[in-house]
Image (cartoon, rainbow, N blue to C red; front, top):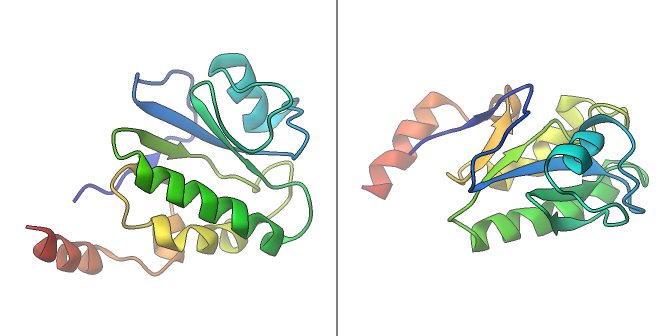
Length: 142
């Protein structure tokens, strides 16, 4: 079992990699990771939720943490349905939207064990996922 860490700065993607970024519901990708997604990886202007180009948008600008949860759950289901892709989750919501890692990381608790989802540094630990648990789970996947 490989646990991936999303690089802090992403300027290129491999063919099977998807840039997962925080957006707004209007899909106005004018700043932060959304700007990078639009300019480098094909995120479509006007699409604020889901896959476009080599990206996946998760809206983070519409309210509190609980308004983000359904979109993260939708993303996790999408990632499960596409094991051939590697999803590089950026620190969604932790820039322009103003949330902390401690507020957003728990939304991704169900993604921690997905081998095709890369999470920002520290998010697995925030979710209580340790190296000991990794070894335990690996034992059952053999």
